[in-house]
Each structure stands twice: as C-alpha cells, then as structure tokens.
Image (cartoon, rainbow, N blue to C red; front, side, top):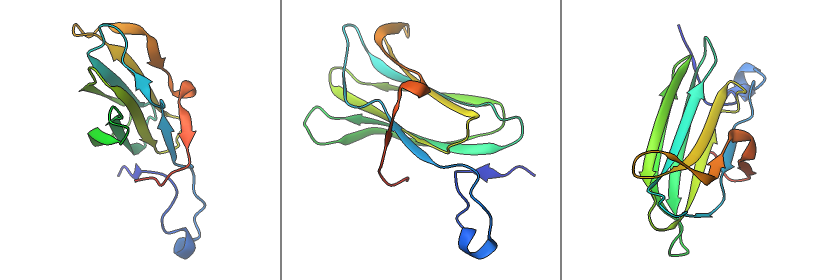
Length: 138
C-alpha cells in the first residue's frame, strides 16, 4: 500500500511520530512576461521510487496589483511520476507558486514558453532558484 505524503504528520500530538519533511511554499516572485511569451510552463516530478506526494501549483495574475489566481491545481504524484501545467500569462505580471511537500525527491521547475511551446530565455526557474514564502500551506 502506498501512502500519500503532503508533509509533516498531522497527528504528531497523538501518535508521537516525528515529521519527516518540512512543507514549503515556493515562489518565482512577481514576474513580467517576456517578448513572445505565451504561457508559464510548470513541471513537477516525484523521483521517489516508493512514496506518493501531493503538490499544489498556482499561477497568479498580479496585473491589477491585487492577486487573481489563474491556475490552482492539486496533483497527486505517484512514485516516479511527472506532471506538467501550462497557463496563459499574456500580457501580465504573474507569479508561480508551488506548495511543496518538502521531500528532496519532489522537484518543481518553471519556464516561460512561446506559442510553439519553446522555452524562452530569462524566465527559467529551477527549484533551487525559487524563494521560500512564510505563508500558510494550503
């Protein structure tokens, strides 16, 4: 039986389990679209051979100065599974947020792509480039 891990044990007060991973909210920060950009492209992968994890991916439009969530997708990643998300972002200021389970085996990357789905230079963020936010995990 596979277990779904979305972070620390929610029952730690009653069962005494020590949380295995510290959940994180990762962000690109607010970005401006680049020339010929059609969409934000996000890829998440669970490289763990046995454990299942959940990841939430959001794309937020900041053009009006107030956040408007354009994409809010919760995905369950089985072991050795990869998923992709593409959200139109033209033309606006946008942010990509990843609600990450904290496992070192779950990787999230985001790219700017054109209409032909080719990666555009300048707005590629590997997971190590994303900033950690101190906000509630949803």
